[in-house]
Image 1 (tube, rainbow, N blue to C red):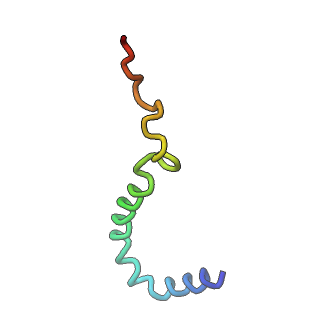
Image 2: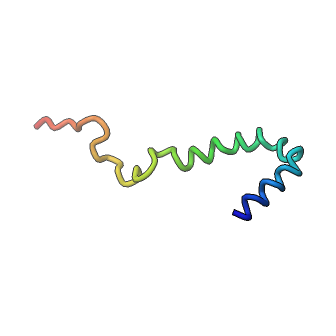
Amino acid sequence: MTVLIGAFFLLREHWGHVAGFWPYLLLLVCPVMHLFHGHGGHGAHGAHGTGNGPAPNREA
């Protein structure tokens, strides 16, 4: 809780400097979100090829 209070006062005093970085932080969020959510979220790496796509052709 002390860290949050300290961060609040630090940002309040230096907001003029921090506000200039918002466009860059928003652009940085895009690739970060792609890294963490680009493959379907939790557990998607082990689920490749488990019936999520079209049924295979089983003609004899």
